[in-house]
Image 1 (cartoon, chains in turn brown, yellow):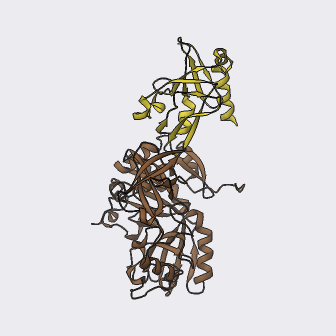
Image 2 (cartoon, one colour; image 1 turned 45 degrees about the vertical axis):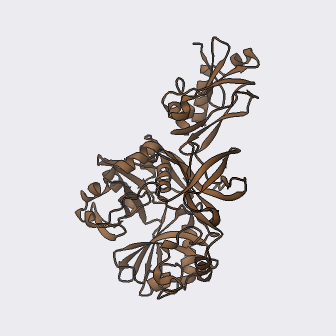
Image 3 (cartoon, chains in turn brown, purple; image 1 turned 90 degrees about the horizontal axis):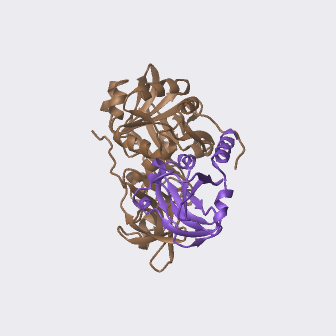
Length: 374
Length: 127
């Protein structure tokens, strides 16, 4: 365990005031839950609106006429044709096609790109960007300068439009500079819960004022990392370091949908990202294992690391994320499974405390996504 | 109903008139665990003191419930299979886990009493 002192987000004092239970996460002292508890926080987000402090994540600005072209050399995603005011999901790959991190990329126009990367990877991502494209564009980390709030849930739009009416017109994955309480913020209509909602990049010294203002709205409750995890799991969304890592490719991680048409083997700008040859070969020939959704058939939660076996007891995979889905009212999981055994509705078993728990290979998301597409 | 006894693992025990001992987890324990979503109850069999007789799963993690004394489990709270939230709602009542016959009937009285357990909680909180 690291003995480094934990970092604090600009909302740390507010979390303590709200009675949060704090835990170390990616080097930060973060709220895992508030007095409401994980279950109610989860359900509140799906029914109304939840406010999450995700300031530990890394915000990075790229600037320069060649920024989009440069970034394309590191991700299998179409950045050059990403429209101004839009955000796109991407991942950094290594020479073997493994995923170094996943991220969101937004186009601010005038050669400016806005990146949000994972907390645990942000220093490594920054070094990666500087090493490979540092001579092609300006790279500005905003780790200290900006906080990041997520307002998620069906009431998020009602709440945020009280502060800025124009956000109601935004559609899923749109990204815009918006003044909130007189401060220059960036707002995207996206998130990590499967619900409609927003992520708000706010100057660090104004984050607490904005968070308090949002929490004053009757629909909004503070939500911790515990519910963030169960929400994203029900939505079938990957958690870096668990559901994919540097040894899993986008094909194995079932993220081929995120590899843009233009960057595929038959695309207009085919390849040109690290590990392209391996990713294309896997796309053609298939993969030995891939990430699938799993629904345990008993009430026992099946957690990360549990082995998956077939009827003969042969190990055919491993659970990468698992827990209880409060909206589903049942356990949910994802795992890597032998591709030959990964057809929908296949019966497999997880080993939990030495016992077999039957599971079905299932479609994801487990709970329907409710993004606002206009 | 006789008074409760406690273990350092935050289980409570109550000696019943029929010689069995009821076991559950304390209010402190359920609060620390958070929302309970599943309880794996023990088998009706002998367990040695310290053996993991039962497992309680919260939204966050799985935790063992250990046999507080040598003994034979004679009854489990089947209600927890469909309503694990009883552990949170009524930890000292409907949220009980199991009953067992201790090998040494006198051993229960040797465990922590309410005052000693309260001091343990306070020491934990101050640590």
